[in-house]
Image (cartoon, rainbow, N blue to C red; front, side, top):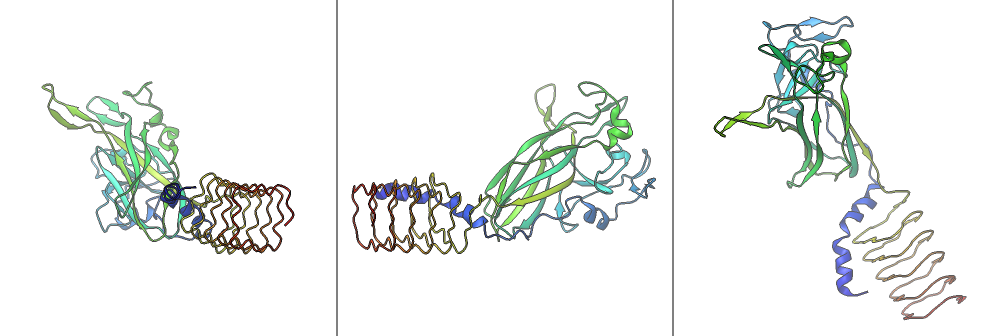
Length: 352
């Protein structure tokens, strides 16, 4: 293996180091909070218009009353941007929150964000509930689909795109395809769609921003000039943050993953114990059932070695260059391979 190829593998090694590190991360972490918006809605003092049959604190039933909603200004809670609304408020189409008294609203080109610092290194996903509204405009109800996007941005500005989604009015409305009015029924008011993000990566100690952003389309004047942003809306509620370790069955123990590039390594059942892999380039090694025990792989270049059933025992591989050695059924026992240059030796059935 050439020095250039080793350096190339080294540059690609960062991702594996993160993955091996996941195995030792605690699942108790700093993470996004108030994911059903109840704390901030209560703190904002959004007025109660009426009380539901189960004691729910609803908004106002018809126009002429104030909207039971509030914008989320900085320092008003964990979330910034967007609007919080009470269930059953006429201003937002009488929608009912599935997880309390409040739900979030993003519309036009409005973002809604929350800053947090990751308390663990992990892959995670988000699930949430989305819906839309039917609203009265002069002589008809409308509620066109609205596009919105979600992203995680770290403190250095790196963006992890979690996808673009489209919310629709549950049950349809006069302007929907197909038309309908089930949004007006109890079932329609309580129907939300479940969404799930792709996995994203968090690194313990880094600051992140979770962003939901409405991407309503622009509309144009007859002369082609920009008229503004179309009035479209998405509701968000019941967000769930799910961390998870993505390191297979690896027991990293006191593993120092240094700059390892696992390439096509199958770390399957590897017990890394106290292995110091330092600058090991595992290349295409199939570590399958290898018991690394107390092996000090130091500067070993395993090249294309198939360590298959090798029992490295107490072997000190020191500066061994295994080259193209087929260690097949070699029993290294307590051999001190010291400065052996195996070159192209076929150790085949050698009993050392």
